[in-house]
Length: 196
Ligand code: URA
Image 1: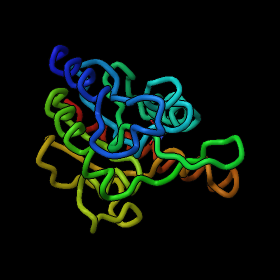
Image 2: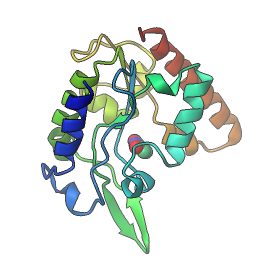
Image 3: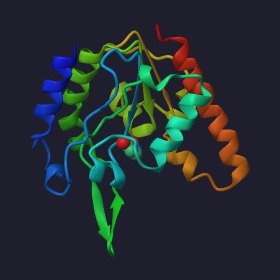
Image 4: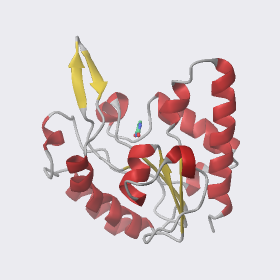
């Protein structure tokens, strides 16, 4: 499958399927070993990812890495990716501020994720946050209500959603952050239990 996924990555590098490519530095495709069993799917690359060209290398990615370790998940079993593969941002002074992708951008980008999931064929897909969860499981999906539960999904044997690690970084205080990180790690453990 390495060939297929490398072909996909090369093709996605030239994607002009929506307008996000105009302001983003580059397409940020998924990464990991091609025999990965677990596929966390985030929203879109952030500022750091857009510059580096790699997913989940910024603050949210570092927290995700720590939580994967805490859940007993070996990074070599994980393919990390996003539902939208270009950084959507608005300027604020000299900073580039994350802007939520819209339905058109998500729909334009979904075929890449579809093909990515088929090429990697993970046992379990883990949607991180509402944007990924609703893009993958439908607009009626509510992370607050449905997180941590396996849901029917046509592209992988198992799928579930949990919060996005950036939501953990925004927790209002240390106590809440600690508790929410614990719940997140629990969700990742559940995902790992389905990974064969
Ligand atoms: N947030 C995401 O959803 N994806 C990344 O790659 C980085 C931050």
